Image 1 (cartoon, rainbow, N blue to C red):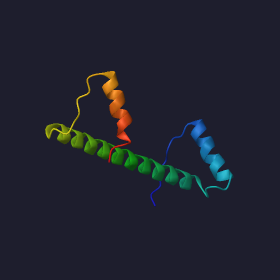
Image 2 (image 1 turned 30 degrees about the vertical axis):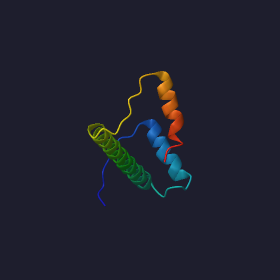
Image 3 (image 1 turned 90 degrees about the horizontal axis):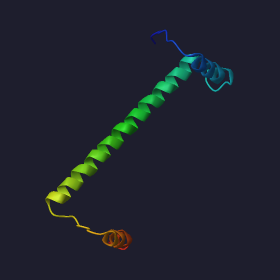
Image 4 (image 1 turned 45 degrees about the vertical axis):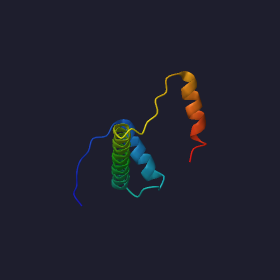
Amino acid sequence: MTARQVTLTKEQHAAVEALVASGEYPSASAVIAEALDQLELRREVARLRRRAFDEAIEEGERDIREGRFTVLRSKQEITDFVAGLGKRK
């Protein structure tokens, strides 16, 4: 392990102290380690969401290029189209 000094706000310090005092974590280092693990998890989830979004955009662009789309010209056409989405297979 490598030692490192960090600066916390009063609120952050109090939160770390409370977690250790409650017995939920054995030390301030354990609290910080868990926080970093959660940060990494959150970043991975964001990366996966971005990738899924990019893939969906690519699929939509491919569908348009290949003519797989429907032109809807009125509110009624949109309403009818949406109503029929659950009925399609």
